[in-house]
Length: 139
Image (cartoon, rainbow, N blue to C red):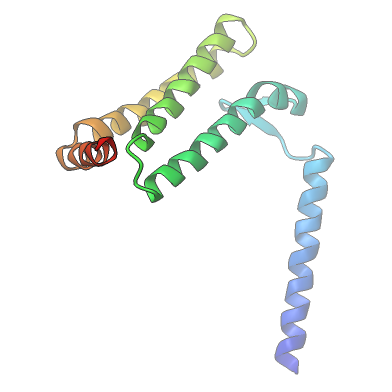
């Protein structure tokens, strides 16, 4: 009886803290940061949210592709990093974001994208695995 009371009390505390966190998000209490710089909520929604949504879809497709052993899944990994670079470059060229934010996004995508290219296309055992998948699906 004491254990169940303590458990229900702890669950109520967790519920209350989640509600407070939700209220903070709704009332714009936490700062929104893009490329290490503070931005307003509307700026974040206008600039970053579309990219975050597309990357979320790509990540879901990548996870599905890996789980289902699809040969195209490795291309989506590279597409995700390429998308970040293209998106940041276009927004920077149009002066919709600060150039420091643009360069940070480009550098971060390059730093993580380059090892991904090596891993998926040049690491012998991984490249052989995806070639085998490709050959299996082309028969």
